[in-house]
Amino acid sequence: MSETADWKQKYRDSLVEMEAEEVRWKQVEQILRRLVGRLCAAGMGVNPRLDDELIALAAANRRNADAGELARLAESLTTTVVAVDATAPVPTITFPPTDLQTRLAIKSLLERLAARDPKDPVPAALIAELAGAKNDSALANVVTRAADLVHGHSEQLQRERLRTAEILAEVTKRLDEMAGYLSDSNHANRSHFDDTETYNDAVMSQVRELTDEVAGATELGVLQSLVNARLERVAQHVSNFRAREEFRLLEVNGRAERMRTRIAELERETTDLHSRLDSEKQGARIDPLTGIANRKSFEERFALEIAQKPRTELAVVMLLWDLDNFKVINDSYGHRAGDRVLQSVAACFMAAVRGNDFVARIGGEEFVMLLSGTKIEQAMLIANQVRTAVEALRFHFRGTPVRVTVSCGLTEVKENDAAEGAFDRADGALYRAKHGGKNLCVAA
Image (cartoon, rainbow, N blue to C red; front, top):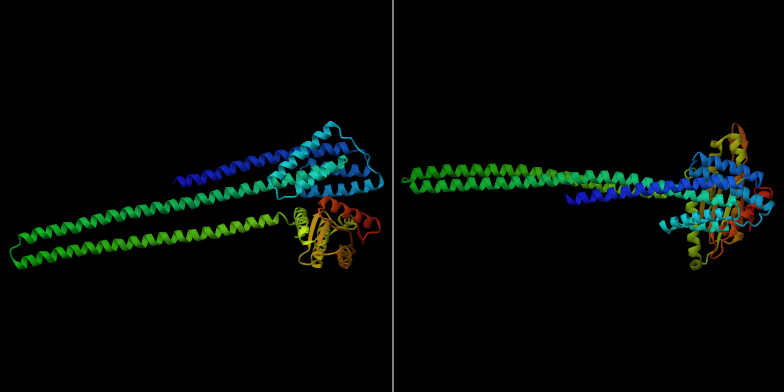
């Protein structure tokens, strides 16, 4: 039973540790949310377009909006910052001491996140973006994404804590069943031992009495009668003992069969648990609306492509897509219509790429593709085919036909390229496609 106590204590300790870790990450998330609010306030007044974006982001932050909404607002803010930068260059800024302290605090947090999961490339990418953030809007974008990352860690810890609690309850139940089985087995063994002793005593008693009677008998008929009587009693003892042993054997076999059944059930439940955990892990990398990969999955895939590039020497092209006039569709026909458009466009993207290519939705109406083993010229042909396929989609909302188009910025991924560098080049090309009339594909 000491092993049972050890198992329980082990899971209890894990549960307490997860609860403490969850509290710490929630505190960090709240600190980041306060930083977002202050950065939004500090960035006001630079540009009217930026002010609208910052007001919306600050309002969502105050009501503790979920990570999805904050991500959409951050993407919209980034797009606006790019547009403002293109029309009015941002002057060089010397960061005041308080801003420097904020940056150091955010960098320290991101380094902790990177140490927690060395395989996750997102914290390192955010540290690089933090170093290049030249204004409050860019800094607010980094803080918002860091808050999303912390929120994701917090949710993952909560799921792990709940799952551990379930496992603890199930293990406790199974250990109690095993303890009961062992107790019953011990009781059965003790009963068998006592019964065997009783049986031996009874048989030996009959033999001793028979010996004494034989020694005192003087006539053969009397001797024969005594022997027969004693043998019948011995036979009766043997028969009773055999009946009890058969009944006991049936009980033992029944308990053993029930325990085998329970063990088989436990094995099936363990397999199901592993399957659910794998599904949850996979779900954390899937966009719930469109069913394709999300930003986290894209960042992991991009890091893998960069790591493999020196060995394979295959060209990789990044395609950054954005739906044209998507806000008009949402405002005119509602978010359900917008969701339907996103799902259809995502399906169109998936149908157009090859098996070794990659498609992800990275926020709002923005998608990204990675085409492996493809030069920029061939990628441009594929991009125009995809653009034409999206344009051919037919939508009707409230009895009105709605035309949907997309714009694309392409760039070839260079060796030792960082996600930010390739993304910025593709984003610049996308910006030119938007300002060139939309429904265009432009290479950088």
